[in-house]
Image 1 (cartoon, one colour):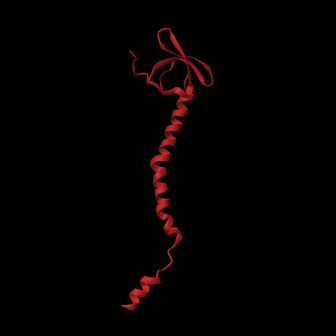
Image 2: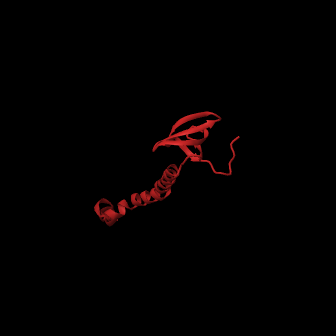
Image 3: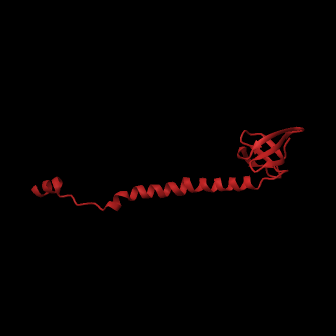
Length: 106
């Protein structure tokens, strides 16, 4: 009876410090593979798509407007035709996606 009280009072053994951080390390690894890595991959694909844009490509802006690149003005700016005879100057970062050639605009 006295042995169990003595053990409860101060007979605890020191725990390994690495074992205390193991759950945090495991959570970070899971977080990296489920959230960070896929986001970096999507960002890299979007950047490659932006770099490959040229005159004649059909695009969708971040505002949801479909258009066709009329010409490239400089490294970061396009002239985009959004309707017959209506052209707007557009920053490259405002391009959301490149429209596939199989999709028709009405």
